[in-house]
Amino acid sequence: MAFDKLIIHWRFSFLSMNFFGLDIGNSSLKLVEVKIDRSKGKVLSLYGSSSLSHPVNLAVDGPEDLKELSSVIREFVDSYSLSSNKVVVALPESQIFTRVVSLPKMPEKELAKAMQYEAQQYIPVSLSEVSLDYQMISDSPTSAEQMEILVIAAPKTLVSKYLKVLKDSSLEVAALETETMAVARSLIADAKTPCSLVVNIGALTTDLSVVSGATIRFTRSISTGGTSLARAISQSLGFDLNQAEEYKRTYGLDSSQLEGKITQAIKPIFDVVIDEIKRSTAFYNTHHKEDKVKRVVVCGGTASLPGILIYMASSLDLEVILGNSWSRIYIPAKFSQKELEESGPSYAVAAGLALKEI
Ligand SMILES: Nc1ncnc2c1ncn2[C@@H]1O[C@H](COP(=O)(O)OP(=O)(O)OP(=O)(O)O)[C@@H](O)[C@H]1O
Ligand SMILES: [Mg+2]
Image (tube, rainbow, N blue to C red; front, side, top):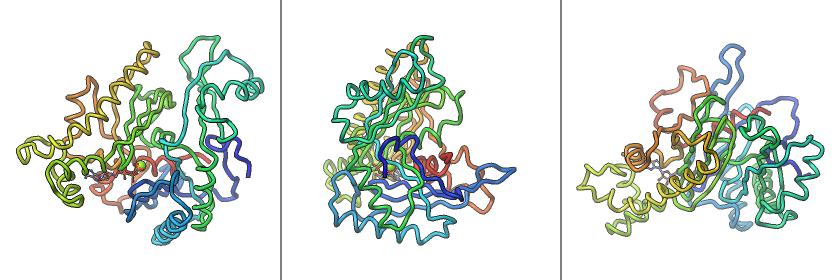
């Protein structure tokens, strides 16, 4: 199987184009399937999640872990009446190198050649070790002489692990992409959406990406997430991890509760995320004075932390909104609106994968 052009462009061509989106997170599996309806567009056909009994990290997991993950995925997928065995999966942002680079304008053919020589300076590992892909950013606001290219590199070992796990789960991979690409698709409606910093706060990682004109301009991943918040509560207040998790979900960053003890415990850790948002925004704004970040869109399971939006808005000089994973999907009446709303933030990746045009 060719690894070239794997992430952005790669796909198998299937006769039938039914597929579902599968988000293999550190703490849970999530899937979303949509169907095309002539009048309603993309219609939600099913969605669901399942917690993983121990954290998954394909970058370091060994053969036994991968085997187990395959059977967990198979079992999870079998518990739904999916209309297809074909799947679109996201590679974890923390393992991917994403850069937007500026080059003199040139025809597509020349660009392919130029990338062979240019790419190495943007990728911190040897090009022989990565699957490299790139895409011209068509609505780039740069000058008439320059063009911007989105360059993505994924370690080949990681890609093979994903392909092996999915094959062993008896799934056919329709396409792979990165988590931020999926999230940008589900949360950012169209090119007219104001320049946004999308923050996906999961269990082990937080991914930040600036999305402008529906295109990714910048990405960054840090190893702080919901698990670190629960650990901080456990350490500072002496609860076991399960109890700490419960306190986190009940009181979070709402300082009016429990004399603000839970907030005090998680604040120093959550502020790592706040600082990274400030740094990423400042960095992006310095280089894009004409197209500054206007708002922050939060998603991922930790976006449901009580008080998170108020806390973020008061710490940042920006509007902060909760990402709506379902905004581009028609929701039939059989689904509970309340359940979709509650679990919405954690489906941003899976929904984006399900919406991929393939
Ligand atoms: N209501 C809630 N309040 C606070 N935190 C929550 C809530 N629901 C879920 N979480 C937290 O969200 C995290 C899981 O989020 P998510 O499902 O986005 O992560 P993941 O995709 O499995 O992990 P990662 O993105 O790091 O690979 C966990 O840390 C969990 O404790
Ligand atoms: Mg995730």
